[in-house]
Length: 163
Image (spheres, helix red, strand yellow):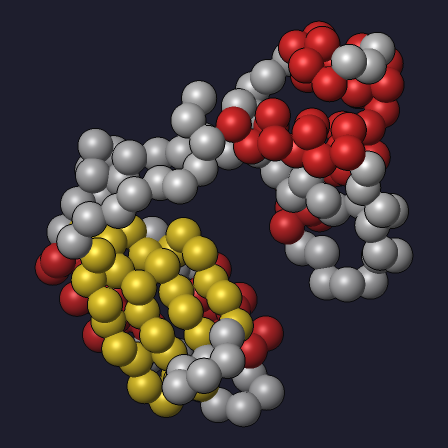
């Protein structure tokens, strides 16, 4: 399944099949090392390679696994400024706003949330000047965005499993 289809899951597919302990173990292994070979996964969960391959494909088809990615040190990758930006948006405009936010350079995570604001956006930019430009000229120019608040990230800790 192409990554675009995995990321575009809009709830139109049937729910994922229930996971058993082997499926959960496979997910844990792949979270720690998305490049783990089928052979390695099969050995670690004590199933055949064919069984491991079929299970991983089922997890992908069911949308449980949405894709594979690399954990990146943003600062070392030239993205020295990171921020969480909270947005208040016009009621019922989530889908339109999400589409526009996904196009922003440096947008890393977008979530519709409850509470004092509607959207939480994580961005990574080259520096504070680029962050300022992103917030003031791109995000605040989206018609459905009523207000923003920017929370600078001073330090991050990746809680994902170590490779």
